Image 1 (cartoon, chains in turn green, red):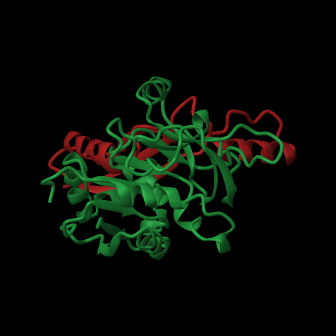
Image 2 (cartoon, each protein chain N blue to C red):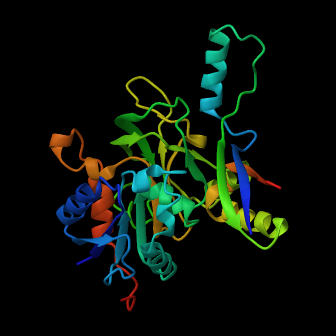
Image 3 (cartoon, rainbow over the protein chains, first blue to last red):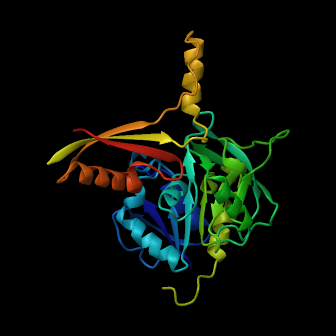
Length: 232
Length: 82
């Protein structure tokens, strides 16, 4: 059974949602405090959504220096899996584990609504349960969700097949790019596919009561993942 | 010695600055004709203990590189008070 560590920062607020989503997928999930320096033999680390350190200075800027982040850097370098959701994505970019940055939404307002996504890469720890080209609907809730990078970096991300999910182009009945992200990017991964970040909240789309279960695939992918032997 | 340092962090040229645009539109709506290219950044003041002005500036630049500015999206300037 996968061991899934969910990191709590002061200001995290989707930590319990992430725990429940991981448990529902059959993983053994537990919380790790941001001052901890050990991940307790985690296979997967989830950096949940929220407003770590009140988003002071820049979203994720202060959280990236938390003691637990050094352990997460080592975990990722050893091939362990890491997913940053929303504020977690911002932290991964600030920490340099993923390229680019997330800045204020183009229309300035906080957006909280379902969005439509295209799954573009399935060879990651968190998207193997999907098919390339799947269209899924899961919610966003963010004020600083506009993914930006310089054009050479964006070209590299695309060339390395590291766009994991993209907002669908505007159309009838489509909830498209809600924040002005470059190239409609909603989630990216590293080339190996073990470190991923996404702005939408799959943990809030796992039950019919939430309007959509399209987020479940991220957690079932994770639960089915086989970590490299001997990692622990 | 301690030096008063002024750091100015600005969104990188070419990056859409929606706050600057919103303020530019608001200025126009208030009748301030001719206000353009508004950009909004952040000013940070801090005291830096150092043996010299140059050392204070160098340390402040390191602080910018590591924390105060995001090299992906922002540029910064550092000024040390005499």
